[in-house]
Image (cartoon, rainbow, N blue to C red; front, side, top):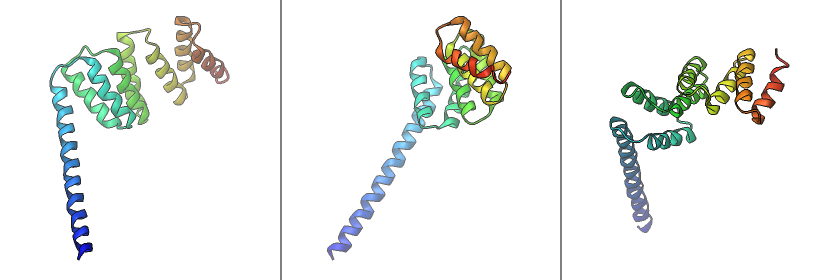
Length: 158
């Protein structure tokens, strides 16, 4: 008799936990969409996007930024870097390149953008473009060890 009671109790509590989890998830999802509808400071947006990146939830991250781009044309460079990185991570290199170029239009000397772009060009075997990017990084910051190392490596492929 006690076993039946315990099993029933476990089933009821499991169902309650599952329902609560689903409701929390729905609330969070609604909050993030409401978040996109209002203008907030970009630091908050970047924090939400960083959470998606850590979870490797690329499509959610892309969706949020693209919705924001449709509403506001003047996003900070970091947003374009993040969406470029998301597309790079799912191997859609032409869109990654597009968004990295958008970021460079806003800030031509952005080290993060240049390093990401150089890495992408290396992965897709556009060694000359990668070399030019790392050379530009080296001209901006002659102490950048990543650029120096990549330049040495890329000279083998040119």
